[in-house]
Image (cartoon, rainbow, N blue to C red):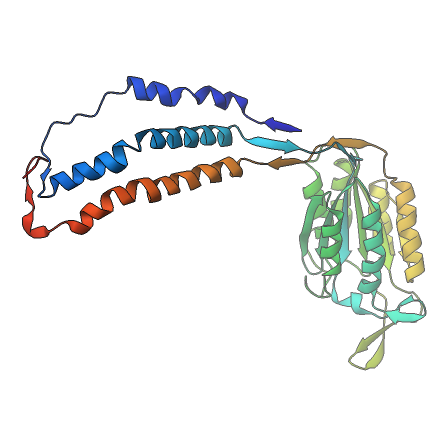
Length: 346
């Protein structure tokens, strides 16, 4: 379907005629330049300017109409497209501190670090949240907003996949991550505001205590689901270069449970890739994607076409009708014979 966004712009069409008839005529009196090639100028004028007056007027009218059409913003409307929209705002807060490099997560029998396992499972979780506005917070010693709330799940997932261990520092600021997510969600309209926080440690950095931040988040209507990553027992298996070592787990499950309970959320524990996958599937059940649609018609702007033609005609007008009319006289001009005064025959 074709339409004009501003059809009232066509009311300007007669404006050029009004200016032509009502504007005062230019005066021919006054001093001018007396040149020795007056006859040549008159002959060229009669041949190129006077004879082409109708053509120039026609081109000017065409340019004016093209500018009016461009100002009216012609558009092409595509077919109606239904987009699923749930209205839920969901933030992911992912721990990228130094402890996430521990190799205690297994995928198909092969060990991998915790962040790699999180990327794989959380990536599928993001892709499945059709219609949700999703944002991403990465935290270590400090918390950073990696992606604001957006319906562009592909970009959010890509930013998650590009994250690296240690980019936000080696320590863990859980409270700051909750505070940052709450700040991004507090001004959002609606009741469905969710934070899924994933960490493998305890709060060792930041200026806000996790429980204090969770209590404030609960008052603001933010529901927090927390996920603890890593194995219990005698320790975690990490690696430096090609040698392995045993690393003690510092996961503060008590605090993560309190954070979840204070906001009406739930706490989960992931000890391998399969359990992490099951946790995200359970969160999908707790926070189901609502069935709703929003209608959208893609709009293609076409104003650049008449604007380009108007520019092209103006350029050709100057190139073909104006310059050739005066160029021969300028070439034949002799500086020795010119004097100032009125433009008349010398």
